[in-house]
Amino acid sequence: MIADVLLLVPIMLYLFINDSNRYAQYHQTYVNMLCAAYGPIGIIWWIVLADDSRMAREALTGAVEMAGLGPFALLWVGYLSFLMSAQSGAALTAHAVVWMFAIIYFVLNVTLIVAHWYLSPPIYAWIATAPLPEKKKTA
Image (cartoon, rainbow, N blue to C red):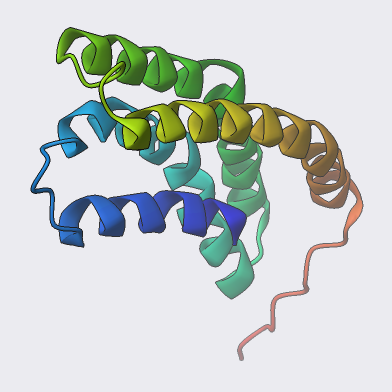
């Protein structure tokens, strides 16, 4: 569910908040990187929930690996892109709201590293050890 929040909330905020100051342009890459990292797991866990199978668990394994790319790589690209584009647009030094997001994104990246470090091993353990549900045989 964390992945679904990280996938959907930034997109909704980007689309529906009035951008009269034109700051949204600085957030585009960060939002894209959140979607790239957490989109697969945000979708796949629903599939596992609906139809737990060997193939669904293999997809979940790949999705957890993709989610790890977020805080360990992609989100830092988004963060640096945010900083560089805001600096180029002269918004980084001029507006407190932009500085606030620079701090929020940094803290979020570090928090997501810690979360992935501690949450992914139990998911991998469940994938490897939990018995698959038996399929009902039809006559």
